Image 1 (cartoon, rainbow, N blue to C red):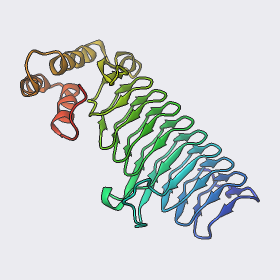
Image 2: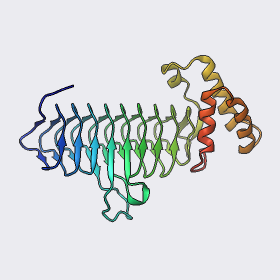
Image 3: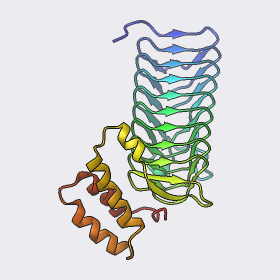
Amino acid sequence: MNAAAPEVHPTAVVAADARLGPGVVVGAYTVIGPEVEIGAGTRIGPHCSVLGPTRIGRDNVIHGHAAIGGDPQDKKYQGERVALEIGDGNVFREFVTINRGTGGGGGVTRIGHRNWFLAYCHVAHDCQVGDDCVFSNNAGLAGHVTIGNFVILSGFSGVHQFCRVGDHAFIGMGALVGGDVPPFVMVAQDRPARPRGINTEGLKRRGFTPERIAAIRRAYRTLYLGDGGLEEARAELAEAAAGNPDVRAFLDFIEAGGRPLLR
């Protein structure tokens, strides 16, 4: 554990009740507001704002001009106490914006661990982001979006409010997602965006065996390329899910409901 005292640039403004862990670095002209807690080893660049209530974990890197924990961009917000929670080991590049939650949406925006948010990305109020995701430049989430683990959003992509994106999904460059995206699925811009198979390359990189990938591909074909409707696909997937955790995860996502599936 880094036991060094926090290092705060003389031009930075830090609220009296903000809590900075050991080894925290705060850059020039950055503002740390009230009710902010920053974990050990986190480094914050120049000209950033971190507003509370916000809790940031360990070993995060926040580059210059990022705005973390700002008020939700929601006309229904009336100043109620809402929060942002960020895990460990995330990277937020220049001009990234992450908003706190809203009273009507659960009250908390959450970011998990080891995510990368490249320049100009936006995460709106009440979003829930898992672990090990990559948001390429200018990717954006509207309010109340749920993102799983190991998800990649390519540059200039966007996800509509209340949509869910499952684990290991891949959203292609410029794709505008208007429905739920099941785990493992690859989405490409096709005016509107639509599923285009499974994220085979990403699964290989994460150690999925050929057998696992083949089972996921069969599940995708059952859902998107079968002759029957959604109920018939669900029945077939239920049979295939017996003893297969990947297909079970695929089916559980569908059964959980939400917005209509992206088709």
